[in-house]
Every structure is written in C-alpha cells, then in structure tokens.
Image 1: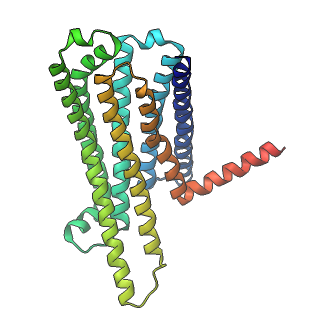
Image 2 (image 1 turned 90 degrees about the vertical axis):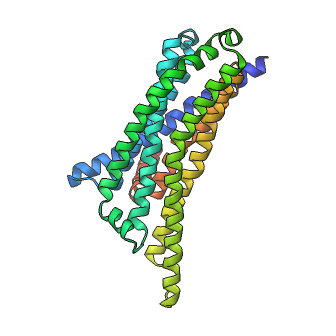
Image 3 (image 1 turned 90 degrees about the horizontal axis):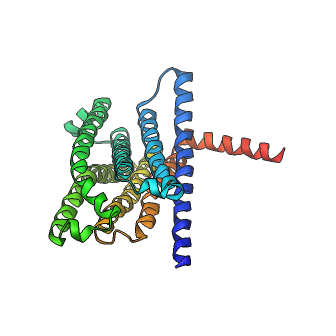
Length: 309
C-alpha cells in the first residue's frame, strides 16, 4: 500500500516537472519571436502562429501544474466540486486552442512549401493569411460549442469522481450514456484537426514525390533546397500527428477511466502521458526551426560560460 502511494506521488512529481519544463520551452519561443518582432517591427505569419501556440500552451500547462499543486498541497480544496470543474474547463479550453494552433501550423507548412498547379490550391496559397485566420475563427466557434457541451455533462462526471455515490446517483445505463456522449464530443473536437493535419501531410508527400520526379526528368540531384524543405516540413507535421494521437487517445481513456474506475490511480499516469504533447512537441518545434535552434544554442553556450565562472 505504501509503495502504491509512493508511486502515485512520483507520477505527480513527474507531471509537475513536465509542466514546468514545457512552460519554459514555450516561454523561450514567445520571447525569441517577440524580441525579433520588436527589432524588425513586424512579425511573419509562421512566427505569429508559433507565438500563439506557445502562449496557449503556457496556459494549458499552467492549468495542469495548478491542478497537480492543488492535488498535492491542498487535496481537500481539490475535492470540492467548483474547483475541480473550473480547472477542468479551463484546461480543456486551452488544450483545444493548442491543438488548433498546431493544426494551423501544419496547414501553413503545406501551403507555403507544397507545389501544385490546381486552381483551388493556388487560391488558398495566395490567401494564406485569410485561410489561417478563418481556421482560428472556426476553432473559436468550436471552443464555445465545446464549452457549452462539456459544461452540461462535466457536473455528472465530477460528481461521480468526487463522491462515492456513483451507483446511487446514476445507474449503469445512464452512466454509459453520458460516457458515450462525452467521448463523442472529444472525438469531434480532435477528429477535425487530425484530418486537416493528416491531409496536409499526405499532400506534402505527394508534392515531394512530384518534385522528385521532375528532378529525375531534368537529370538533377535529390539534394536541392526544396526537397530538404519538404522533408523538414513533413517531419514536423508527422511528429505533431504522432504526439497528437497519443494525446487524444490518453484523454479519451482518461474520461473512460473516470467513469468506470473513478478511484484508479491510472488517471495520474494518463495525465503524464497526455502531457507529452504540449511539452515534447514544443522542443521538437525549437529543433526544427533554424532561428529558434540557433537562439537555443546561444542560450546554452551563455549558461555554460556562466556555470564555468
């Protein structure tokens, strides 16, 4: 029993460390892009999307960190219905925004890098700013829908989770019905950005194949700049999709666990796993961006010199 409790505290500590590291990475992205925009007195669309993504992830990770701190330091406060409901809704809304900004980044890579002669693609490419703005507005509409829908059922889920009256409050059929509805909402929330990002990846791959074929026909090599740019963009979109799949699956499993085994410590482990997406993907973005990577190297060198003094 003591080992089980100790294991739960270790996982909770790892969640807190994961949140702090992820927040530092996103603060770094925000500061680098902000300082450059001040110097140049303008900001590119890619940097704007990255900055919005970083800010939304800071809020998302902060909510997870706040939840972990309250759970560890003030468990009596976390057991109250109002606190748990507020934290969950704010986390879900910030999580929704992080997913959609990451999706906008995937679509930006596709429109910026891919080469197609189709009129629809050219129309979207020429109106890239409006396309991204339209996606952001659409995501905000879904945020409102998500909030209204989840607010209707979150009371039932948290009542089951907080109190020991699950069987008295709802029978198994009613609980299953609410379970299916919340899972359906989650699937809708995550299905659309997943499809958009997957489509961007596939079209980037198709564009790369056509580009490589044209190079062969023209008797040129495969190491040109456009080929490398395609490959880097595909790696970034693919990494987002893989982490996003793990993230969304963990969320769905966490909801299912809350309904069926509400006392199970598995929830903390699932939170640790789903947190890989906002934290881990941040550092993949830093490594995949030349400007951010160079800024990170300069920062590491500066810290190394400070430690040697």
